[in-house]
Every structure is written in structure tokens, then in C-alpha cells.
Length: 285
Image 1 (cartoon, rainbow, N blue to C red):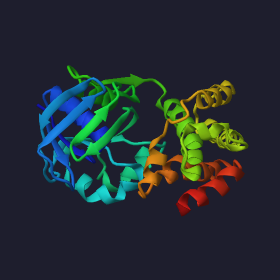
Image 2 (cartoon, one colour; image 1 turned 30 degrees about the vertical axis):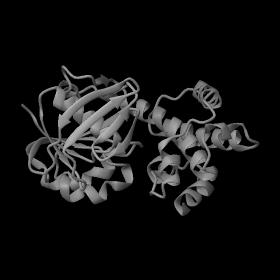
Image 3 (cartoon, one colour; image 1 turned 60 degrees about the horizontal axis):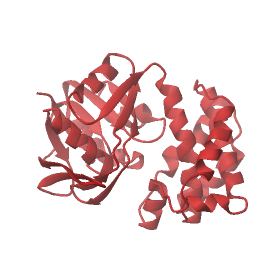
């Protein structure tokens, strides 16, 4: 049995935690909120019910960091407390800076970036509605394969890929444009059909492609039109986590999704004039 400290049992953390318990692991949920049961439901009704083991972080075989990207520093003490001589840290967050965000707290432990595709919504502490997909991508190496092995026998489907950098930037192509437009307008995806807003998303996407290529991601020109078509085809009432956070008055992931374009652009000498305007507006939210 593998010991796992799961930090941040929100929508993703609860879903992943249920899968790890299914797989037979000893999972401690490191949470400020107390709840007795971990409940995962789907549109068809109850899916998983597990007793919730909530406790402080102690040295564990694995740390799974499932907080929002901007909450990493506040989880730093728990990360440090969970590190033992053989600990590996899996970072299940948005953005492309998984290692940079965690290295100050890792104590030299191996860091495993994870690209997450787990659509879920938390209704209450310990209670999540999951929409039937639990995909995760890691780099195809020893640590990545060990992460995938954690989920053997569960409903989650992690996979190791040869080029995680490209997968991370492909997801950022989705998140950077749509997140910014929805957060700034406080409207769902139908807003893309209003004058000028699809053009704004296109400009953000173009900057994302340029910076991602400089970072080594394989992003062909076709990505731009494919992504624009996907956004424009979305149901008008579809939302995303950036919009939901803004509506709820919570801090959102503007830095991990958009601020990174300015940082990485400057690193490579790539101008990002649209992001230079958009990012301060997002920060002002």
C-alpha cells in the first residue's frame, strides 16, 4: 500500500482521491475543511463513496498537489511536511510552470508535472460532481510511469507521453484565451460571438503559440484555426473555472494562464503586446 498526501481536495483532488482509494492506497486528505465522506457523483447519480481520512501532512511516498496554481505558496508548509526520503511530488495544476512553482518547497524531491483532464465541480466540502473523464498526462520516464501505476484498478486513466511540453502548451492554448475573455466579460462562451471578442481571443492564442514554440512545444499553425473553431462551437452557456472564480469573488489563475506568456515571452525576446494589456486587467479582478 502506498502512502499519499493529497493537498487540496477540491473538484480535481476529490475525484483523483476517490480513484486512488479505489486502487487501494492510504490517502490522507490535507484540508482546512473537515468532512467525513468523500462523495463523487455523476449525472446518473452516486458513483463513489469513501470515508474521508483528513489529517496533517506527514512524510509520505507521494504528495499530490491539487490546489489552484496561485495557492501553491500557501500549501508550501504542507508540502514540506509531507516529504520523506523517497517522496515524489505530483503537481496536478494548470499552466506550464509546475516545477518552478513547487521547487522552493520540494526539498529536492522529484517533481512530476501532470496535465489534468478531470472535468468536475465541487458542490460542498467532500462532495463533487464528476463528468465522466479522469485523464492525466505525465512525461514518459520512471517517475511518470510510477505515477500512472498508482491508478491501476481505478476509474482514472493516466498516460505517459513522449512530449509533455507540447501537451502542456496545447492545454494552455485552450486556457489562456477562453479564460481571459470569460473572466473579463463575466459572460459564458456565447460572448465569443459578440463583436471583437473572438479577435481578442485569437490575438492571445497567437501569442501563446509563439511563446510555446520558443519553449520547445510542437504547435503547428493549424492549432490557431482549430482552437478558434472549437471556441465558437461551444454551447453559449458553457463556463470555465476562471469565470466561476470571478463570479464567486475568488482569486483566479490569471498568472498561471496569462501572466506566464509575458514572463516566457521576455525570456525569449518575443513581444506579447496583447497580454501586456490583458494581464493587468485580469490582475485587477
